[in-house]
Image 1: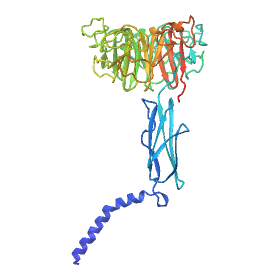
Image 2: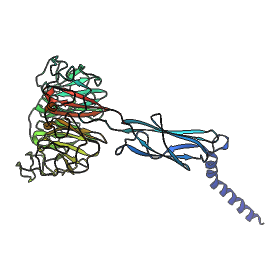
Image 3: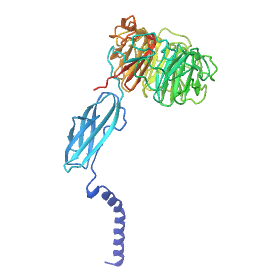
Image 4: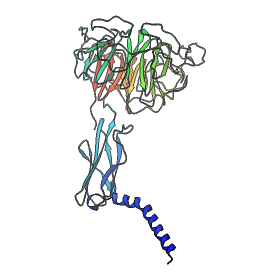
Length: 494
């Protein structure tokens, strides 16, 4: 072989070695100690921390890696074995989730005795309740059968809107005493005493006030996990604290609906509101039920006092505010439509859909996504069979002046004030006029009397319920006519 040919051959061998070197490294990296392949199990159907919506029973799937010979395997839910099936390298199981916390673990042992495992923590938001369930305890009264609380620090005269929990602190609005009561922890029994008050300097003070530390007939509250917002009704504004307020009369950081903390001029513009009733954070948006302007306003999260809203729903423009005005002429009309509102009192979102308690139309409007254009039409309606009726009704699908709405990824709760009850949907309602699954405050869907017909408060009855709020395994309801908030405890299932 000529010398040039031998030199070319050596060059080709060298190049081939360089090309194959990474693959050789990859192959030598795969084996574990002792030259064996690393064995593992990977849960492929769900991710750690996933929030599960929809049916409670889920299909779990896990894949065995480099483990052809399996001696045994287990699937566990919260430490309890669940029946599973293995087919080759795939392990599957049908798992019935508990309310909220679910630790799912898969473990497999090879015939050689090597054990591998994987786990994920899943959240199934749900509060298991029953029709006419008794409340567990009351806040604002010393028990569930009295309306006699007279201690200024503990009494609640007007439980008006949706409560909130932020940083473990509970905030309960009281529109009559012009304050929001603050509890360092969520109470666990009747007769709890608050730790601080917002809107007043002292617990004995009850007059409506303006300023950064004042409140006048506050309505609903809301939190995004960092901030607290309060719809300050008679001051025609929304107050925002940039962190959880825990001090007596803590001043708000931001005001919307007014140019500063001292003005109180209700109006119908992009920067003004008129007696707002409820508020909600939706991602980086703030949504306000501007009650007396018959509209809902949406802001990109504002950072300056008196900022202008970006979107209005319920009205064709920021300067028309008549109820049920679909002709865009500034005049009220007899019938509602999918685009109009009349006295909306509350707003809430599950992160995807927007719900509006359209009180004077005796309905809840559902938008499948947060509207980004003015005068958007709702996608569904609850409490009515169509968008053009407004008569108050009872039954499993009727509403009468709903005042508050809240829920989670799997349930919806509506304070049906005029029917003296709370309706619960156990899944996201998908059709107009969808029937609720259970009722609180009444023995059945047809009864609508105060306290289910009792002359006095009971653990089971309600009198004109207002704010409704779910936190953990608790449902908190403002029981207006009984001067209290009642707290229902969920029972974990299965």
